[in-house]
Image 1 (cartoon, helix red, strand yellow):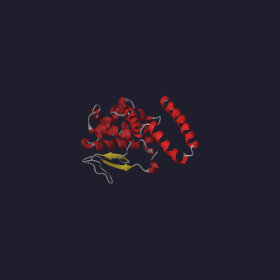
Image 2 (cartoon, one colour):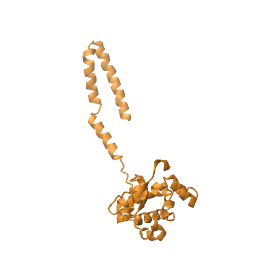
Image 3 (cartoon, one colour):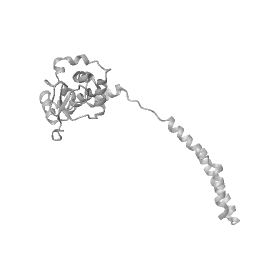
Image 4 (tube, helix red, strand yellow):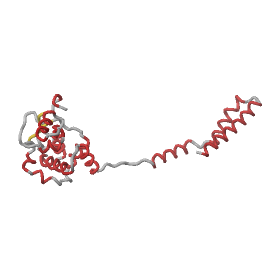
Length: 217
């Protein structure tokens, strides 16, 4: 910075001297532009040098941020006000309910439970059961009596520590991004046909009972 200030000062003194001489001999209209360009070209560094310096500084200071699976889980726990155990229970329920053990069906199952936290009727029903507005909590929607039979029967426990399946990744992806696949509130096994239902994978659950706008909170 000091070098640039000294350079500017020297340029100013040099320019004043040149201007005085050219005015004295009345050749300013011819010589001033030429002299000015010559002085600038001698004093100021080339544009490429400046651009290269800035480019290197920008690249050197750039930092790549990688979000790990653990980072996503911590974000989910905080966003949904869950303990690690409650998150494991949710994952166990979803993975056991998901048919064909696919990414798509696990994503659809957790999406269904999430949709219930956005339904005025479902949140009211669960809050009346557990109190304190628990109906908006995805954990209490998942463990509600007579809803997901794998929890009632205890078969969900076999998947409590299943953290390597595609379905587990699907649960994390949905809860982290909240990118909704569907607006259904219920599902049945793939071998139970339901009118106007929809499936999202081969031999996946049949999803039905749409969350209507008037029922959305």
